[in-house]
Amino acid sequence: MPTVGLFNKEGQKVGDIELADSVFNVEVNPYALHQVVVALQNNKRQGTQSAKTRAEVSGGGIKPWRQKGTGRARQGSIRAPQWIHGGIVFAVKPRDYRTSVPKSMRRVAMKSALTSKVAENEMIVLESLELDAPKTKDVVKMLEALKADKKTLIITAESNENVYKSARNIEGVAVIPVNNINVYDLLKYNNIVITKDAVSKIEEVYA
Image 1 (tube, rainbow, N blue to C red):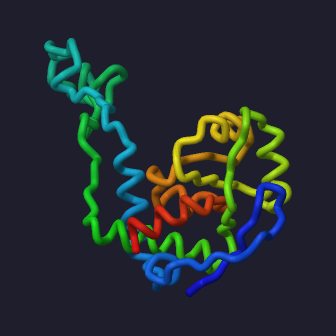
Image 2: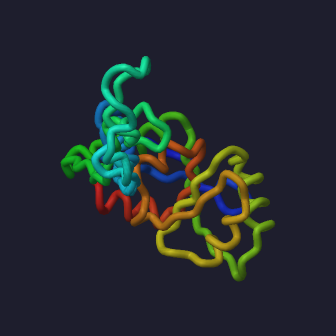
């Protein structure tokens, strides 16, 4: 059972916390991680791009010049793809890029991402994270004390407006509630700062 340090907002270690083996100490599955990340990226695509083929471009109904005798290459329409303002070859059309991934694979990928963060000492567990009012300097001071000076993802047990407003102007820092975490965000950020209550909720869902 993996054990990590438990810290307060001042960066002081106040104890240790044991993490569930079934969530934070599993075999990392790179294939599942790749599949889920690709699906998440695909699902963000709007798929609204559209271009016109030569059949859809207006004009070009008349042959620009006669077939023979001019010395020029034969042309049937000024809206052919090789002409300026002509149609597009294999024009892109609106489509749905959504990719579905089995629930079991999503669970494996989530556990793999969490395990990799623990194994690489990139997950910091906070005893609690409460702010009386939105203050960016308080979050900056906390991250410096925790030595989370690179891209950091702060995970809270519930939506916390004070924490969100305090961190939204810090470059490379993001705040999300635990029910919104995804594999892409876990892998994107160098450090994960998570509250003790959020860890309990993750274990409750994925254990």
